[in-house]
Amino acid sequence: MADSDDTVAAPVENEQQFWNGLNDIVSAPCTNPESLDNTLRSWLYLVATGRDRYLDSEDEIASCSQKLRDSHVFCANEEYVRTQIIYSLLQEDDLAPLHAIANFLLLDGRAEEATFRHMVGEGCFGRLLELIKSCGEQDRRLHRLLLELMYEMSRIERLRPEDLVQVDDSFVTYLFQLIEALSDDVDDPYHYPVIRVLLVLNEQYMVASTSSASPSSPTAPTPLTNRVVKILSIYGPSFRTFGENIILLLNRATETAVQLLILKLLYLLFTTTATYEYFYTNDLRVLLDVIIRNLLDLPADMNVLRHTYLRVLAPLLAHTQLSQPPHYKRDQILSLLDILRGSGTGHFMPPEPTTLRLLERVAATSWLAEVEPEDYYAGSPSSTTAPTASAGKPFALGSLSQAQAGSTVSVVARVSERPGVKTPSRKEDSREAQGGNHTNDNHEGQGSNGGGAATGAAAGGLLRRLRPQKSLPEVPRHRYGVPIVGVPKMPSAAVVAAAAGGRGDAHHPHGLGAGVGGANAGQKKMPPKLPPPRRRKLRTASASAGTGSGSVIIGSAGEGVSAAPSEMAGPTQCS
Image (tube, rainbow, N blue to C red; front, side, top):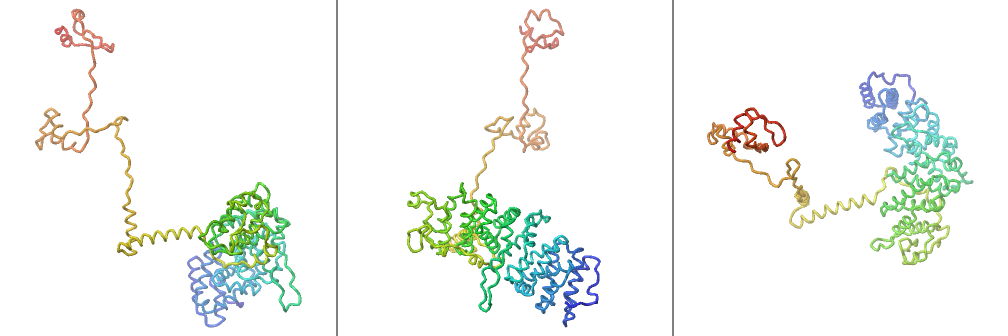
C-alpha cells in the first residue's frame, strides 16, 4: 500500500462507532487503484487503533478480517489485496498493524492455500522468523498468532533451502525453552503452537534431506542439518517436557496430518543413537499404549497411517528402554500382530504385502521373537510368525534383507495428508453400522405388513412406548411400626350418628348426625381407645366396721385413695 499523508480514518469514541466505521470502510466504492489503497489503509488503521480498546479476543479481530474478505473490495481484487497485505507484512514494524495483517493472512490462507504459497514465494518465512524472536516479550497475543501463521504456511508449502538456512540453533533452543517454561495462557497450558512449529520444521528438514540434486545443477546441494534433532541430541535431558507433550498431543490428536508430523519426529528420535533414551520409561509405555490403541482402531483403508505407526513401532521396541526386561505388554503386542496379520479370520481379505513386511519387522524384535518351541509350532496366539498372502506357511524371521526391510527417511518423509482431514475410527463406523441395521430392520418388518418407512419408524416408537413396565412392590401399611394385614372399614354416617347417643338424627338432613357423617364421610377416623380400668382391693367387713366416712383405702398399687361415704357403703352392703 502506497504511503499517503491524508487522514485515513476518523478517530472513534466508542465501540459502536468503531463497527459502524468499519462497515463504512469496507462498503466504500473503489474505482481506481488509489481509492483501493486508501480503503486498505483505512481498514488497517482502524483495526490497529481499535485492537487494544475494542478487540479483546482473537475472534473479534478475525471478524474484522472476515468483513474485508466478504466485501466487494476484496472479491473484485483478490490478488491485488493479498499482494498488498503481504508486502505490508514485510515492511511494517508496529505491533498493532502487524497483528491485523497476520490475522488476515491466517484467515485467508486457511480458506485459500494459494495465499500461503504466495507468502513462501515472497520470502515471508524469514520475516516471521525475525518477528517471532523480537515480539515474544512485548506482545504475547501477536507472538502466538505469528507461530500459528508460520505453522500453517510451512505445512502447506515446501520451504526453500535459503529459508531453512536462516533457522539457527538459538531459535530452536528458544522454542524448546518456551515449552519448558510455565504457560501464562489458560487456554494453552501445553504450548501447542510452539510444539507444532517444531514438528513442521522437522518435517521440512526431512523433506529437504531427501531431495536430490537437479540434473542441470553442477553440484549437489549442501545437506542441511536437522536442528530439531540436533538440539535434542545434545540437550535432550533439559527439554523432556517437549517429549511428554508430543505424546499427550498424539493421544488426543484426531487430525491425520498432526499424527503424521508427530510420528515422523518419533521415527527420527528412535533411529538416532543419541536420542534412544530421550523419553522417560513411563512415557514410552504410555506411547506404546497409544500406538496399540490407534492401530486397532484404524479402519482397513487407512494404510498410510497404519504403515507409519508400524515403522515407528519397530525401533521403539528395539532401541529404547522398552527392550530391557521386564518387557512391557509383550502378550498384547503379539496379539496385535496376529490381529493385523488376519490370523484365524478367513472371512476377510488378507493384508497387503507392505503391511505384512512391516509386521514381520516388528515381530523380528529380539525380545518378541524369543518364544517357546511348543508355542512356535502349535500356532498359539503368542506365536510371532506371519502368514504369507500366497501360501499358508509363515515367514521365517529375518528372511528379508536390509534393503527390503529397512525404512529410509525418504519413505517416512514423503507421507503426507491434507490439513483438516480427521482420522476415521473403526469403533465409530461399527456404531453407525449397527444403528443403520436396527433402523433397516424396523423398516423391513413394517414393510412386510404393508407399511412404509415412515410407518415403520412410528411403529418402532410405539412398540418402545408400549413396553411393559415392572410393577413397583407394594408398600406395607404399618401402625406404630407393626405391620397390619387388613385395615378395618370405616362405619357409615348412620352408624356413627347412632353411636353418638342420640345427638342428632342421622337420616334428617338438618340433624347433627347428618352433619357429622357428611363431614367425615371421606375420612378414616378410628374411635378413641379407652384405657383399662384401675383394679382395687375390696375392703373386708371387719375393716369396714371401724371405718367412718373419709377413710383411706389402700389400692392395688399401694397408693392412698380418698373414698367418699357413699362409695364405702357399697362393698359393706354386698358383704
